[in-house]
Length: 248
Length: 265
Image (cartoon, rainbow over all chains, first blue to last red; front, side):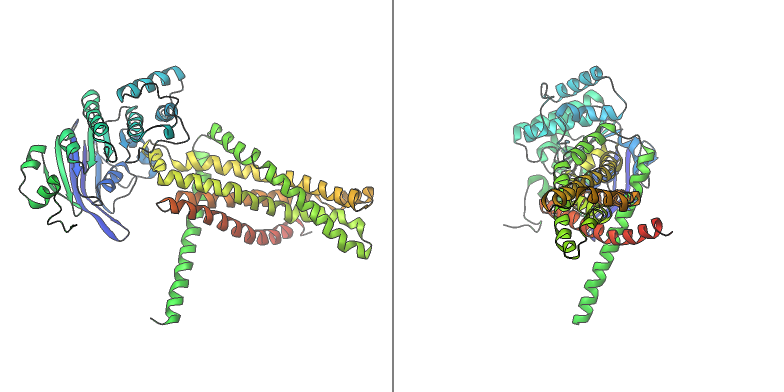
């Protein structure tokens, strides 16, 4: 469904991605882990066409997306949903208007249909009854769930999650993880989840890829990652600072 | 490195930076005009912006226009009285208001009020990933965010300027006639006699071009905001300063150009 081939990206003179190769199959959930600042979010932005890669290709459903103009990207973006780290709800619009936005853009004008679809999406993320609230009135977890509802309302084929559980308490984080699993199963969508939360990675990933120094350093099932004897992977998975150059 | 080399390097960097910014502003202007024809106009957004820019700016613009006209009439009366030229106060106030004071002061206020708001709003959207979210939902940000703001300001600026002219000239009349006792019939007759419709046209053309300048610079600044909340403050300040300075510089060239075009015969 999605293939990244030799993706390279420099930001501010520093090489962030140095040849990332990754493949995601139909309905597959791939978790990309890695230390803060290793380029996980940059990779997602490149997949979404929000950043152009310096080299390499993004191939989605057999179509090469790299090199397309901003406007030519848009039809593909409508097939890919993205949950941003900070939720990125439009703060001047109510929850209802936020969720109805992608539908209106797709040409839906019938208010009754819009109301039904918004209510359905909010029910999936357990936020029924919040239609008239403004984003500023929601908690962090509620914002993420509302943003998730907005991202899935057009039933994308691929969902990108940028740090979906960061900054949330363990209970809310667990609810988001369950939601990611539930959405994948219910809508059959493939997902790429970027995180450094190993609980989340083990829970939602069919496959885990460890991004290190701009490349996929290790790739395997959650069990393979847990059994991996490589020091870098082991230290990251177990949360050890020794040997990583980070000391107290 | 010698001091001269250091200064040359700094200066070169500043020139390069300015050229890059100017290039970015022109590209955005081109993209905005192209998007106006390529996409459907979002009337709801345009009306919302027209309300914010056009209606909500009226008090500040009318007050400025009124007091500028009043103060200018008073100053002119103090000087002209010495030569017995009170009857020339009307056309002097009227022509100055139309050609320079009206459009320049009105648009400087718009740069401060509307330009700052545009830059702050867009840069806040940028740093909170709302612009990226828009792109991720398949919406072109120039079409959705910039075209309505641009159109609203370009349409509102001449209308507000015209209102500032009316209040300015009206208040000038009030000060000269009712306070300083200049003959009202002479004042008004000379005002109408010496104020050409070309003077009003100059005011409206200038306001339209200033609207383009303010909207483009403010939107460009907002869409290129550096990360962080400090970036929003810096962007907002730069938007107002850059728009105001550009407006004043362009005003000089416009004055020369419009006079050459409209008064060549």
